[in-house]
Amino acid sequence: MEQDKMQKIVALCKRRGFVFPSSELYGGFAAVYDYGPYGVELAKNIRNTWWKAMVQDNENIVGLDSSIFMHPKIWEASGHTSGFSDPLTECKECHARSRVDHLLESVGVAADEKMSAEEIDDLFAKNADKLKCPNCGKNNFTEVKKFNQLVQSNLGNFTDDWAKEPTYLRGETAQGIYVNFKNVLDSARVRIPFGIAQIGKAFRNEITARQFIFRKREFEQMEMQYFVKPEEMMSVYDEWKEKRWQYYLDLGFKEENLRWHKHENLVFYAKEAYDIEYNFPFGFKELEGVHARGDYDLTSHSKASGVDLSYMDPNTNEKYMPNIVETSVGVDRTFLAVLTESYTEEGSDEQARVVLKLPYQLAPIKVAVFPLLRNKPALVEKAHEVFTALKKEFMCEFDDNGNVGKRYRRQDEIGTLFCVTIDFDTLEGGEDGAKDTVTVRNRDTMKQERVAIGELQAYLNDRLTK
Image (cartoon, rainbow, N blue to C red; front, top):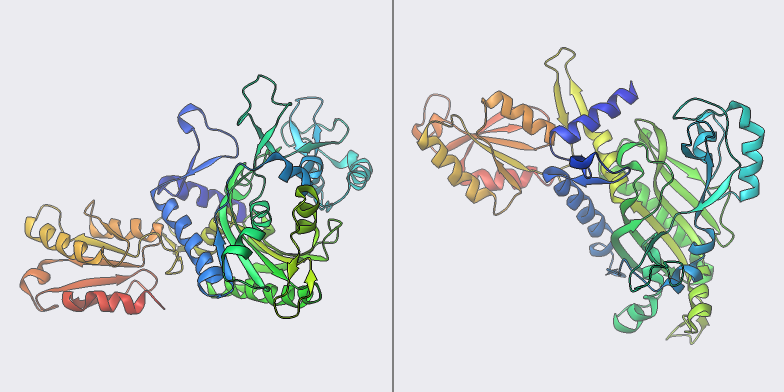
Protein backbone atom coordinates (compact mmCIF):
# COMPACT_ATOMS: atom_id res chain seq x y z
CA MET A 1 0.00 0.00 0.00
CA GLU A 2 2.73 2.47 0.95
CA GLN A 3 4.80 1.54 -2.09
CA ASP A 4 1.69 2.22 -4.14
CA LYS A 5 1.61 5.69 -2.57
CA MET A 6 5.22 6.23 -3.65
CA GLN A 7 4.31 5.33 -7.24
CA LYS A 8 1.40 7.74 -7.13
CA ILE A 9 3.63 10.55 -5.82
CA VAL A 10 6.22 9.92 -8.56
CA ALA A 11 3.46 9.92 -11.20
CA LEU A 12 1.95 13.13 -9.85
CA CYS A 13 5.37 14.82 -9.84
CA LYS A 14 5.82 14.07 -13.54
CA ARG A 15 2.22 14.76 -14.56
CA ARG A 16 1.93 18.08 -12.76
CA GLY A 17 5.42 19.42 -13.35
CA PHE A 18 7.06 19.00 -9.96
CA VAL A 19 9.95 16.66 -10.83
CA PHE A 20 11.28 15.36 -14.16
CA PRO A 21 13.95 12.71 -14.77
CA SER A 22 17.07 14.57 -15.85
CA SER A 23 18.09 14.20 -19.51
CA GLU A 24 14.91 12.25 -20.21
CA LEU A 25 15.15 13.13 -23.89
CA TYR A 26 18.29 10.96 -24.01
CA GLY A 27 17.04 8.14 -21.82
CA GLY A 28 17.62 9.74 -18.44
CA PHE A 29 20.64 9.93 -16.15
CA ALA A 30 20.61 7.81 -12.99
CA ALA A 31 20.03 9.55 -9.64
CA VAL A 32 19.74 13.03 -11.19
CA TYR A 33 16.45 14.92 -11.41
CA ASP A 34 15.14 18.29 -12.61
CA TYR A 35 12.54 20.41 -10.84
CA GLY A 36 9.68 21.56 -13.05
CA PRO A 37 7.57 24.75 -12.80
CA TYR A 38 5.76 23.78 -9.59
CA GLY A 39 8.70 21.85 -8.15
CA VAL A 40 11.01 24.83 -8.38
CA GLU A 41 8.46 26.93 -6.47
CA LEU A 42 8.02 24.28 -3.77
CA ALA A 43 11.80 23.88 -3.40
CA LYS A 44 12.21 27.68 -3.19
CA ASN A 45 9.57 27.85 -0.46
CA ILE A 46 11.29 25.03 1.46
CA ARG A 47 14.57 26.97 1.33
CA ASN A 48 12.91 30.23 2.36
CA THR A 49 11.08 28.61 5.27
CA TRP A 50 14.28 27.00 6.55
CA TRP A 51 16.25 30.24 6.09
CA LYS A 52 13.65 32.20 8.05
CA ALA A 53 13.76 29.67 10.90
CA MET A 54 17.57 29.75 10.98
CA VAL A 55 18.73 33.25 10.04
CA GLN A 56 15.80 35.62 10.25
CA ASP A 57 14.46 34.25 13.54
CA ASN A 58 17.88 34.05 15.25
CA GLU A 59 19.90 37.20 15.82
CA ASN A 60 23.18 35.31 16.22
CA ILE A 61 23.03 33.19 13.04
CA VAL A 62 24.35 34.63 9.77
CA GLY A 63 24.34 33.35 6.20
CA LEU A 64 27.04 32.21 3.81
CA ASP A 65 27.27 31.03 0.21
CA SER A 66 30.61 29.30 -0.30
CA SER A 67 31.90 27.96 -3.61
CA ILE A 68 31.20 24.50 -4.96
CA PHE A 69 34.87 24.23 -5.94
CA MET A 70 37.37 24.59 -3.11
CA HIS A 71 41.08 23.94 -2.66
CA PRO A 72 41.76 20.17 -2.76
CA LYS A 73 43.66 20.37 0.54
CA ILE A 74 40.39 21.19 2.29
CA TRP A 75 39.11 17.71 1.46
CA GLU A 76 42.36 16.15 2.62
CA ALA A 77 42.20 18.00 5.95
CA SER A 78 38.55 17.07 6.47
CA GLY A 79 39.25 13.38 5.85
CA HIS A 80 37.07 13.12 2.76
CA THR A 81 39.79 11.98 0.37
CA SER A 82 40.68 9.06 2.64
CA GLY A 83 37.49 8.23 4.53
CA PHE A 84 34.47 9.45 2.57
CA SER A 85 33.50 6.10 1.14
CA ASP A 86 30.77 3.49 0.92
CA PRO A 87 31.14 -0.32 1.05
CA LEU A 88 30.75 -1.73 -2.48
CA THR A 89 30.23 -5.22 -3.81
CA GLU A 90 29.62 -6.47 -7.33
CA CYS A 91 27.43 -9.33 -8.50
CA LYS A 92 29.65 -11.83 -10.34
CA GLU A 93 26.69 -12.94 -12.46
CA CYS A 94 25.31 -9.67 -13.87
CA HIS A 95 28.04 -7.23 -12.67
CA ALA A 96 25.51 -4.93 -10.97
CA ARG A 97 27.11 -2.96 -8.14
CA SER A 98 25.44 -2.55 -4.77
CA ARG A 99 26.10 -0.84 -1.48
CA VAL A 100 26.72 -3.52 1.13
CA ASP A 101 24.82 -1.67 3.85
CA HIS A 102 21.76 -1.55 1.56
CA LEU A 103 21.99 -5.29 0.83
CA LEU A 104 22.23 -6.04 4.54
CA GLU A 105 19.35 -3.72 5.26
CA SER A 106 17.20 -5.67 2.79
CA VAL A 107 17.51 -8.77 5.00
CA GLY A 108 16.92 -6.88 8.24
CA VAL A 109 20.54 -6.40 9.28
CA ALA A 110 21.42 -2.87 10.38
CA ALA A 111 24.73 -1.65 8.97
CA ASP A 112 25.43 1.92 10.01
CA GLU A 113 27.41 3.95 7.47
CA LYS A 114 29.80 4.98 10.26
CA MET A 115 30.92 1.36 10.81
CA SER A 116 34.53 0.53 10.08
CA ALA A 117 35.47 -1.51 7.02
CA GLU A 118 36.24 -4.46 9.27
CA GLU A 119 32.81 -4.33 10.91
CA ILE A 120 31.05 -4.15 7.53
CA ASP A 121 33.16 -7.04 6.19
CA ASP A 122 32.28 -9.14 9.22
CA LEU A 123 28.53 -8.50 8.85
CA PHE A 124 28.71 -9.20 5.12
CA ALA A 125 30.46 -12.53 5.68
CA LYS A 126 28.01 -13.61 8.39
CA ASN A 127 24.97 -12.85 6.24
CA ALA A 128 26.33 -13.63 2.75
CA ASP A 129 24.08 -16.66 2.25
CA LYS A 130 20.95 -14.51 2.75
CA LEU A 131 21.85 -11.78 0.28
CA LYS A 132 20.50 -11.56 -3.27
CA CYS A 133 21.45 -9.26 -6.10
CA PRO A 134 18.64 -6.68 -6.53
CA ASN A 135 19.19 -6.86 -10.31
CA CYS A 136 19.30 -10.59 -11.11
CA GLY A 137 18.42 -12.26 -7.79
CA LYS A 138 21.58 -14.40 -7.69
CA ASN A 139 23.82 -14.89 -4.65
CA ASN A 140 27.36 -14.52 -5.94
CA PHE A 141 29.21 -11.41 -4.80
CA THR A 142 32.76 -10.09 -4.85
CA GLU A 143 34.56 -9.10 -1.68
CA VAL A 144 33.66 -5.78 -0.11
CA LYS A 145 35.60 -2.76 -1.32
CA LYS A 146 35.51 0.86 -0.18
CA PHE A 147 34.41 3.30 -2.88
CA ASN A 148 35.13 7.02 -2.39
CA GLN A 149 32.11 9.24 -3.06
CA LEU A 150 33.93 12.46 -3.93
CA VAL A 151 33.30 13.54 -7.51
CA GLN A 152 36.54 14.47 -9.25
CA SER A 153 36.94 17.28 -11.77
CA ASN A 154 39.68 18.61 -14.02
CA LEU A 155 39.09 22.24 -13.02
CA GLY A 156 42.38 24.09 -13.55
CA ASN A 157 44.09 20.91 -14.77
CA PHE A 158 45.07 21.23 -18.43
CA THR A 159 46.73 17.83 -18.71
CA ASP A 160 45.15 14.50 -19.54
CA ASP A 161 46.06 13.10 -16.12
CA TRP A 162 43.41 13.93 -13.52
CA ALA A 163 45.33 12.07 -10.82
CA LYS A 164 48.13 14.67 -10.81
CA GLU A 165 46.20 17.59 -9.36
CA PRO A 166 42.67 16.40 -8.60
CA THR A 167 39.96 18.88 -7.73
CA TYR A 168 36.52 17.92 -6.47
CA LEU A 169 32.92 18.96 -6.54
CA ARG A 170 32.15 19.45 -2.87
CA GLY A 171 30.77 16.42 -1.08
CA GLU A 172 29.07 18.58 1.55
CA THR A 173 28.54 22.27 2.21
CA ALA A 174 29.81 22.26 5.81
CA GLN A 175 33.51 22.51 4.88
CA GLY A 176 32.84 25.86 3.19
CA ILE A 177 31.52 27.10 6.54
CA TYR A 178 34.51 25.85 8.54
CA VAL A 179 37.12 27.43 6.30
CA ASN A 180 35.22 30.74 6.40
CA PHE A 181 34.84 30.73 10.18
CA LYS A 182 37.58 33.32 10.69
CA ASN A 183 36.34 35.49 7.79
CA VAL A 184 32.85 35.65 9.28
CA LEU A 185 34.20 36.26 12.78
CA ASP A 186 36.39 39.13 11.56
CA SER A 187 33.82 40.80 9.34
CA ALA A 188 30.45 40.31 11.01
CA ARG A 189 29.39 41.49 14.46
CA VAL A 190 29.22 38.01 15.94
CA ARG A 191 30.57 36.52 19.13
CA ILE A 192 30.44 32.96 20.35
CA PRO A 193 27.92 31.40 20.55
CA PHE A 194 26.92 32.04 16.95
CA GLY A 195 25.95 30.08 13.87
CA ILE A 196 26.61 30.14 10.14
CA ALA A 197 23.86 28.88 7.83
CA GLN A 198 24.21 27.85 4.22
CA ILE A 199 22.08 26.38 1.44
CA GLY A 200 23.90 24.90 -1.52
CA LYS A 201 24.54 22.05 -3.92
CA ALA A 202 26.67 19.05 -3.02
CA PHE A 203 27.70 16.04 -5.09
CA ARG A 204 28.30 12.39 -4.27
CA ASN A 205 29.17 9.50 -6.55
CA GLU A 206 26.48 7.21 -5.18
CA ILE A 207 26.95 3.54 -6.00
CA THR A 208 23.25 2.79 -6.40
CA ALA A 209 20.42 5.14 -7.23
CA ARG A 210 17.10 4.42 -5.60
CA GLN A 211 14.02 5.84 -3.92
CA PHE A 212 13.34 8.70 -6.32
CA ILE A 213 14.78 12.03 -5.08
CA PHE A 214 15.63 10.63 -1.64
CA ARG A 215 19.13 9.68 -2.76
CA LYS A 216 20.60 11.80 -5.55
CA ARG A 217 24.08 12.33 -6.95
CA GLU A 218 23.51 16.07 -7.22
CA PHE A 219 21.54 17.37 -4.26
CA GLU A 220 21.03 20.43 -2.13
CA GLN A 221 21.82 20.79 1.56
CA MET A 222 20.56 23.22 4.19
CA GLU A 223 23.18 23.22 6.95
CA MET A 224 23.84 25.29 10.04
CA GLN A 225 27.05 25.06 12.05
CA TYR A 226 26.77 26.55 15.55
CA PHE A 227 30.02 27.48 17.32
CA VAL A 228 30.06 27.23 21.12
CA LYS A 229 32.33 27.01 24.15
CA PRO A 230 33.47 23.41 24.68
CA GLU A 231 31.73 23.02 28.03
CA GLU A 232 28.44 24.28 26.58
CA MET A 233 28.30 22.03 23.52
CA MET A 234 26.06 19.28 24.88
CA SER A 235 23.49 21.62 26.44
CA VAL A 236 23.32 23.65 23.20
CA TYR A 237 23.09 20.39 21.25
CA ASP A 238 20.02 19.37 23.29
CA GLU A 239 18.45 22.77 22.62
CA TRP A 240 18.90 22.39 18.87
CA LYS A 241 17.43 18.91 18.95
CA GLU A 242 14.27 20.35 20.47
CA LYS A 243 14.17 23.27 18.01
CA ARG A 244 14.56 21.09 14.95
CA TRP A 245 11.91 18.62 16.11
CA GLN A 246 9.47 21.48 16.72
CA TYR A 247 10.25 22.91 13.28
CA TYR A 248 8.59 19.93 11.58
CA LEU A 249 5.61 19.98 13.93
CA ASP A 250 5.11 23.66 13.13
CA LEU A 251 5.10 22.75 9.42
CA GLY A 252 2.20 20.42 10.10
CA PHE A 253 4.01 17.07 10.15
CA LYS A 254 2.22 14.42 12.19
CA GLU A 255 4.35 13.47 15.16
CA GLU A 256 3.76 9.78 14.55
CA ASN A 257 5.57 10.16 11.22
CA LEU A 258 8.72 11.38 12.95
CA ARG A 259 11.15 9.61 15.25
CA TRP A 260 14.65 9.99 16.65
CA HIS A 261 17.44 7.59 15.70
CA LYS A 262 20.63 7.61 17.72
CA HIS A 263 23.90 6.83 15.92
CA GLU A 264 25.48 3.85 17.64
CA ASN A 265 28.62 3.95 15.49
CA LEU A 266 29.99 7.47 15.74
CA VAL A 267 32.84 8.89 13.75
CA PHE A 268 35.84 9.16 16.05
CA TYR A 269 35.55 12.90 16.72
CA ALA A 270 31.79 13.12 17.39
CA LYS A 271 30.37 13.26 20.89
CA GLU A 272 26.82 12.34 19.93
CA ALA A 273 24.64 12.23 16.82
CA TYR A 274 20.92 11.83 16.26
CA ASP A 275 18.84 11.73 13.09
CA ILE A 276 15.27 12.86 12.76
CA GLU A 277 13.73 10.10 10.68
CA TYR A 278 10.55 10.49 8.64
CA ASN A 279 8.15 7.75 7.66
CA PHE A 280 8.57 7.83 3.89
CA PRO A 281 6.52 5.39 1.75
CA PHE A 282 9.52 3.06 1.90
CA GLY A 283 9.84 3.28 5.70
CA PHE A 284 11.52 5.46 8.31
CA LYS A 285 14.67 7.04 6.88
CA GLU A 286 16.93 9.95 7.78
CA LEU A 287 15.48 13.38 7.12
CA GLU A 288 17.80 15.57 9.20
CA GLY A 289 20.93 15.06 11.26
CA VAL A 290 21.71 16.91 14.50
CA HIS A 291 25.32 16.30 15.57
CA ALA A 292 27.67 17.29 18.35
CA ARG A 293 30.92 17.43 16.37
CA GLY A 294 33.39 18.69 18.96
CA ASP A 295 36.41 20.72 17.79
CA TYR A 296 37.68 18.33 15.12
CA ASP A 297 36.77 20.44 12.10
CA LEU A 298 38.38 23.73 13.12
CA THR A 299 41.36 21.92 14.65
CA SER A 300 41.98 19.95 11.43
CA HIS A 301 41.85 23.05 9.25
CA SER A 302 44.06 24.97 11.68
CA LYS A 303 46.75 22.29 11.46
CA ALA A 304 46.50 21.82 7.69
CA SER A 305 46.45 25.53 6.80
CA GLY A 306 48.76 26.85 9.49
CA VAL A 307 46.15 29.50 10.42
CA ASP A 308 45.06 29.61 14.06
CA LEU A 309 41.27 29.26 14.16
CA SER A 310 40.97 29.36 17.94
CA TYR A 311 38.72 31.98 19.52
CA MET A 312 39.71 34.69 21.98
CA ASP A 313 36.85 35.68 24.26
CA PRO A 314 36.87 39.52 24.33
CA ASN A 315 35.39 39.61 27.83
CA THR A 316 37.48 36.99 29.64
CA ASN A 317 40.54 36.79 27.35
CA GLU A 318 40.04 33.01 27.41
CA LYS A 319 41.36 31.31 24.28
CA TYR A 320 39.88 28.04 23.06
CA MET A 321 38.99 26.05 19.97
CA PRO A 322 35.20 26.31 19.48
CA ASN A 323 33.08 23.18 19.44
CA ILE A 324 30.41 22.72 16.80
CA VAL A 325 26.76 21.69 16.88
CA GLU A 326 25.53 20.86 13.38
CA THR A 327 22.06 20.62 11.89
CA SER A 328 21.93 19.28 8.34
CA VAL A 329 18.95 18.51 6.12
CA GLY A 330 18.46 18.08 2.38
CA VAL A 331 16.12 20.21 0.28
CA ASP A 332 15.28 17.11 -1.78
CA ARG A 333 14.49 14.89 1.20
CA THR A 334 12.37 17.65 2.74
CA PHE A 335 10.62 17.99 -0.65
CA LEU A 336 9.79 14.27 -0.69
CA ALA A 337 8.74 14.26 2.98
CA VAL A 338 6.44 17.24 2.39
CA LEU A 339 4.83 15.53 -0.61
CA THR A 340 4.39 12.31 1.37
CA GLU A 341 2.86 14.15 4.32
CA SER A 342 0.56 16.24 2.09
CA TYR A 343 -0.61 13.66 -0.47
CA THR A 344 -4.27 12.87 0.21
CA GLU A 345 -6.96 10.90 -1.58
CA GLU A 346 -10.57 11.66 -0.67
CA GLY A 347 -13.27 9.26 -1.81
CA SER A 348 -12.87 5.64 -2.84
CA ASP A 349 -14.20 5.51 -6.40
CA GLU A 350 -12.43 6.28 -9.65
CA GLN A 351 -13.36 9.94 -9.19
CA ALA A 352 -11.50 10.20 -5.87
CA ARG A 353 -10.12 13.69 -5.26
CA VAL A 354 -6.32 13.86 -5.11
CA VAL A 355 -5.11 16.86 -3.16
CA LEU A 356 -1.75 18.04 -1.85
CA LYS A 357 -2.59 19.57 1.52
CA LEU A 358 0.61 21.60 1.60
CA PRO A 359 1.14 24.13 4.40
CA TYR A 360 0.43 27.67 3.23
CA GLN A 361 4.07 28.78 3.32
CA LEU A 362 5.18 25.89 1.08
CA ALA A 363 2.39 25.75 -1.51
CA PRO A 364 3.78 26.65 -4.97
CA ILE A 365 0.62 28.54 -5.96
CA LYS A 366 -1.36 30.37 -3.29
CA VAL A 367 -4.30 31.55 -5.43
CA ALA A 368 -5.71 30.51 -8.81
CA VAL A 369 -8.02 32.86 -10.70
CA PHE A 370 -10.67 31.52 -13.12
CA PRO A 371 -13.09 33.13 -15.53
CA LEU A 372 -16.22 30.96 -15.43
CA LEU A 373 -16.12 30.66 -19.24
CA ARG A 374 -13.15 31.30 -21.49
CA ASN A 375 -15.30 32.32 -24.47
CA LYS A 376 -16.93 35.28 -22.69
CA PRO A 377 -14.61 38.30 -23.16
CA ALA A 378 -16.14 40.27 -20.30
CA LEU A 379 -15.51 37.44 -17.83
CA VAL A 380 -11.96 36.91 -19.09
CA GLU A 381 -11.18 40.62 -18.92
CA LYS A 382 -12.48 40.91 -15.36
CA ALA A 383 -10.59 37.74 -14.34
CA HIS A 384 -7.36 39.18 -15.73
CA GLU A 385 -8.01 42.39 -13.80
CA VAL A 386 -8.40 40.43 -10.53
CA PHE A 387 -5.39 38.26 -11.35
CA THR A 388 -3.18 41.28 -12.07
CA ALA A 389 -4.10 42.83 -8.72
CA LEU A 390 -3.58 39.65 -6.70
CA LYS A 391 -0.29 38.55 -8.27
CA LYS A 392 1.45 41.60 -6.80
CA GLU A 393 0.82 40.12 -3.36
CA PHE A 394 0.59 36.35 -3.89
CA MET A 395 2.03 33.67 -6.17
CA CYS A 396 -0.95 33.29 -8.49
CA GLU A 397 -1.99 31.35 -11.55
CA PHE A 398 -4.54 32.22 -14.23
CA ASP A 399 -6.47 29.14 -15.38
CA ASP A 400 -9.21 29.07 -18.05
CA ASN A 401 -8.63 25.57 -19.43
CA GLY A 402 -11.57 23.17 -19.15
CA ASN A 403 -14.65 23.40 -16.97
CA VAL A 404 -14.42 24.78 -13.45
CA GLY A 405 -14.66 21.33 -11.85
CA LYS A 406 -11.61 20.09 -13.77
CA ARG A 407 -9.72 23.26 -12.87
CA TYR A 408 -10.47 22.68 -9.19
CA ARG A 409 -9.10 19.14 -9.44
CA ARG A 410 -5.97 20.35 -11.24
CA GLN A 411 -5.32 23.02 -8.62
CA ASP A 412 -5.98 20.51 -5.81
CA GLU A 413 -3.25 18.27 -7.20
CA ILE A 414 -0.64 21.06 -7.08
CA GLY A 415 -1.73 22.21 -3.62
CA THR A 416 -3.26 25.60 -4.51
CA LEU A 417 -4.92 26.99 -1.39
CA PHE A 418 -7.68 29.14 -2.89
CA CYS A 419 -9.47 29.33 -6.23
CA VAL A 420 -11.20 32.57 -7.20
CA THR A 421 -13.91 32.35 -9.87
CA ILE A 422 -15.26 35.34 -11.78
CA ASP A 423 -18.81 34.61 -12.91
CA PHE A 424 -21.81 36.50 -14.27
CA ASP A 425 -22.81 37.66 -10.79
CA THR A 426 -19.42 39.38 -10.61
CA LEU A 427 -20.40 41.50 -13.60
CA GLU A 428 -24.11 41.96 -13.06
CA GLY A 429 -25.06 40.90 -9.55
CA GLY A 430 -27.81 38.42 -8.91
CA GLU A 431 -29.73 36.42 -6.35
CA ASP A 432 -26.65 34.61 -5.06
CA GLY A 433 -24.19 37.48 -5.13
CA ALA A 434 -23.79 41.20 -5.38
CA LYS A 435 -21.99 42.87 -8.24
CA ASP A 436 -18.18 42.97 -8.00
CA THR A 437 -18.05 39.85 -5.83
CA VAL A 438 -16.28 36.59 -6.64
CA THR A 439 -16.54 32.98 -5.52
CA VAL A 440 -13.62 31.87 -3.34
CA ARG A 441 -13.18 28.13 -2.88
CA ASN A 442 -11.05 26.68 -0.06
CA ARG A 443 -8.77 23.76 -1.01
CA ASP A 444 -9.15 21.77 2.20
CA THR A 445 -12.82 22.29 3.05
CA MET A 446 -14.05 22.84 -0.56
CA LYS A 447 -16.42 25.45 0.88
CA GLN A 448 -17.20 28.45 -1.28
CA GLU A 449 -17.82 32.03 -0.20
CA ARG A 450 -18.79 35.21 -2.00
CA VAL A 451 -16.23 37.92 -1.33
CA ALA A 452 -16.19 41.50 -2.56
CA ILE A 453 -13.29 42.21 -4.93
CA GLY A 454 -12.31 45.21 -2.83
CA GLU A 455 -11.96 42.95 0.23
CA LEU A 456 -10.39 39.99 -1.55
CA GLN A 457 -6.74 40.72 -0.76
CA ALA A 458 -7.43 41.20 2.95
CA TYR A 459 -9.58 38.06 2.99
CA LEU A 460 -6.78 35.96 1.45
CA ASN A 461 -4.04 37.54 3.57
CA ASP A 462 -5.94 36.64 6.72
CA ARG A 463 -6.31 33.00 5.69
CA LEU A 464 -2.90 32.49 4.10
CA THR A 465 -1.09 33.12 7.37
CA LYS A 466 -3.02 30.63 9.50
